[in-house]
Image (cartoon, rainbow, N blue to C red; front, side):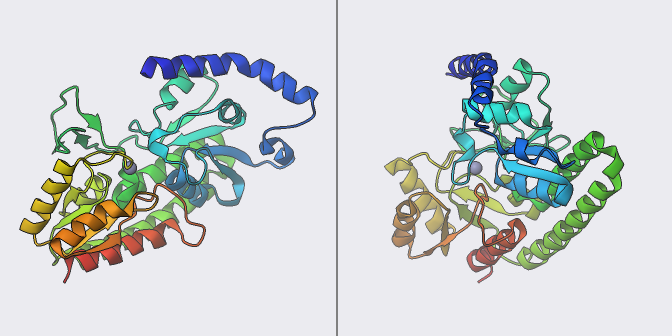
Length: 314
Ligand SMILES: [Zn+2]
């Protein structure tokens, strides 16, 4: 499966020079970056929504940030098309979350060293996940364990991601180094305020919550909470078996859980079935993997906090 994907990417790369030539000859640019080339702007591709938002906060009006994974497409399973690889080749930087969620990125940089990929997870202590048992372990790395990529849900790890983005932009455009660093510092200040608020508001509450998919391990570890999940997977589109659902119901009953969480773009019935069984309600706890035009990333983090307070602080 992995080899097939790799072969697919190699084949796509091999086709690009021809494809580009055809595009030039027909005077139909497939990529809007070219029309903006009069400006001095840096063109950056951000892999998916949180990375796009963080990059915009650091680059502001000196960086043209485009989203690689289209809005509404689940980043866990995305693979680049020919057009996406063309966009990658024309960008100054590709900024990714890292930790395996962009499983195409290693192939891209191995095959085409001219494409600069910035991994924002650099320097973050990672959490390992057993996809079968949903058991987090620390300091132990058996082969079947994978790395949990959901670092964008913890304000403290986001600060490291933001600094990694700033460092990459400063290296590319040192003349505006202070500008990028100041923008990063302001955003990190906002993240500190949010962090303090989460810490204070959840400190005297219950600790056990039921997220939909396994996305909140970094958040839970940071704030001393215990994440349980409706799905065992780190991928939100797995169907739970009746046995899985029964286990969740039993545990939620034992813990006297008042809220079962669901999230955007998944089947809400799964959480509803469990909630009905135990007489609890269903609320949203967003893994923030998709953008929302009406709210900023931090506003949505606050929304998650409000719903966690309903679940934990009654
Ligand atoms: Zn996820």
